[in-house]
Amino acid sequence: MIQDIFESLIFLDKVSIPDGMGGFETIWKDGAEFKGYINLDNSIEAKIAEKQGVTNIYTVTTENNVFLEFNDIIKRKSDQQTFKIKSLNNTENIPPKFATLNLRYATAELFDLLPTSE
Image (tube, rainbow, N blue to C red; front, side, top):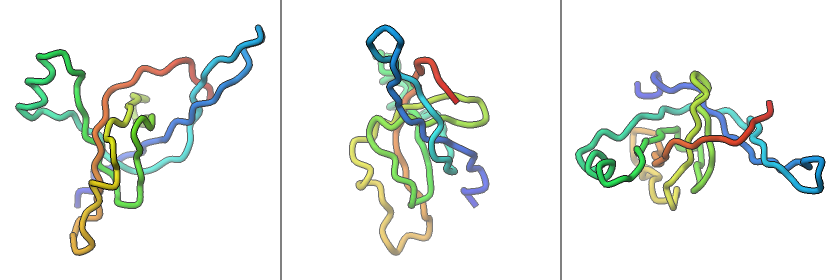
């Protein structure tokens, strides 16, 4: 079953805190944990886009009850790698009610975080 390859992923929440000088700094805190799988898109189209300067594109596969929205930041727990969701409309990739697979897909790119706090 495809869910057998799922691993722990975590939503990251953006938090602004005072910087002590009258301004604010942004930190990222771990949010809800969910199961999913992230893989690099190795299609011919993705390789052509990469040659033209487009960043690597990843596919995030989750169960149907996980809603990933545009610009959500998620982290793969195993290696702490972070990704930014690039799919514009997550309602378009909902499987039909008669589908036997309970999966949803989103596209993502690597994302470098600012300082984090646990």
